[in-house]
Structures are given as C-alpha cells and as structure tokens.
Length: 346
Image (cartoon, rainbow, N blue to C red; front, side, top):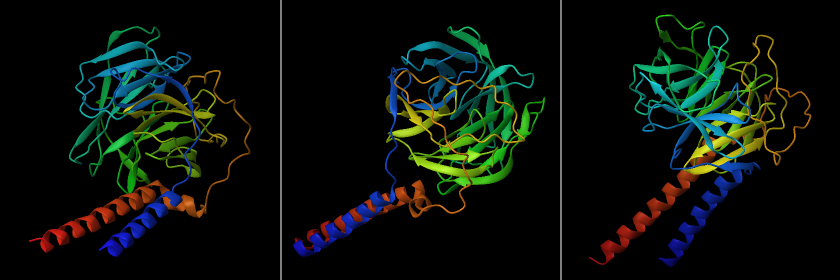
C-alpha cells in the first residue's frame, strides 16, 4: 500500500508540476492604495473618470444595489456615491466610460450577468457622469439588450457611444456589437461579431487605440476595435477573483481590482497602443499613476501575433484545466484508497 500511495503522490505531483510549468510568471504590479472592503467587498467593474483626474468609478457584484462609487486612486477614499434611481439591478458585471450620442460624458453600466443562461434580456444603463463629486441620486437611461442564445457576460467596451459585450463562456465567449446608434425605444438586439477565449471577466478600451481583455490570470492586448487583432498577452498578478480593469490616462498601464481583495493595483503594459483608422477619439480620461508608478516607456509598433509561443498557446484556461485535473485525480485516488481500506476492515 505504501508503494501504491508513493506512486499516486508522484503522479499527482507530476500533474501539478505540469500545470505550474505551463502557467507564465505573475506580472509585477504597484499597489496604489487599499480601499474599505466593507463598502466594496465584491468589485466587479472599474471605469476611469472622463472628467476627474485620479478617479475611477467602481461597483459591486450582484447584491450590491444600484450604487456607483467614485474612488480616489491615490488614497482609495470614496469621494462620491451615486444612487441610481428607477432601476433594479439583477447581476451588474461591467462598467465603461464613454459618451452619450451628443458627446456628453457618461458611464455605461452593464447589468449583463447571466450565470444560468436564461435571461431573455439584459440591461445597459446610461448614466451622466457628474461634474461635481458628491453623494447624489441620479437617473439613468436604460436599454434592454437581447442576446441569442442567452450567455453570461462580464465585459463591456465603449468607444464613445459604440458598445460591445464579451461573453464569459468556459472555453470561449461571444463578442457582440450593439446597434449604433442605440434605438430610441430602448430595446436592441446584440449582433455576434466574433469569438473570444474563455472565462473573460472584464475588458476596456485603450486610450490611443486598441483594447484589453482579461480573465482570472492574464490580459490580452488587441489592436483596432472588437473583434480586433491579438498583439500580445501577459500574466496578471495573483488575485482572489480578478474581475475589474481599466486603463491609465496615457494607456501605459492597467488598473485592476478583485473581489475579496482590498488592493487597487497598477500593472505596466509595454506594448504600444495601436490607433485604428476607423476608431473615433476616445473621450475617456483615466487616472494618472501615483509617484511610485512606473513611467511610460517607448515601445516599437507591435505586430499581430500569428504564431504564439508554446506557453502562450496553452492559455490560462488550459492552465486552470490542468490544475483542476490534477486536483480531481488526487481526490479520485484518495477516494479509491479510502474505500479499499474500509472494505478490508469490514
């Protein structure tokens, strides 16, 4: 029995080593500040203010109410709380800064989560960004969005008033484009325009061009508008449940947050932005890094990644699958051993 158990442990360790070796090293990051986790226990979306320097807007996951919070990125103090009147949020998962059709800065708030895959309609709320940072009750313009078939989503992208969503499938997610302009009657049908890798938890348009898509372990950088061209991918810092992301003002770094983690982190991105000939200038202004933040460095124009390195081809989903497989394997063998011993003693 000892030999059997020794062999089991050896094989299990081999699986774990495979998973760890396939996973790229974690990215370096700068801790900007720590926020009050009792107010923001489950951050699920971030969007940098288009009006106020060093401010990001944030919201909690489902159960957090119809509330948006303005956070100082240098201190993590909550500078204002917006109570959105006239709506009932079900599963809010994403936030993006953009404009209304008249160019007015707004926050696009996506109540787009659908864990059970049964919502006929999801909702996106258009909320004017306040010029003055103070607690206030505000009204939103709400658009009902139909996705066929229904699919869970946690990522919303805004280029002005043009919007995209990305699904959170286990192995892949649909990229949807919303009608532009959005219909006056408030109801629209999302159109599938591409496919993204699995487990997407957020996405953000990049100042200067392109966009980023994150999952729980890595971020992918794209050129152009969705569905864009993949130009790079990089690991993210370890987080409990990383679901929120936005860009800094110059597009040189990402600001990320996680459920169950009170840190606001800055992650430098060395890949240059890629302006698209069809892209409209983004009105989104994002907070400047603090004095400890790395300064932007010049990068050569990126090329589209057509062939990825072996580690990159593995992808974060495969890494997670290997880890899960190793765990299931170990538990299965332990179960067999326990049952065998129990039968021998009966």
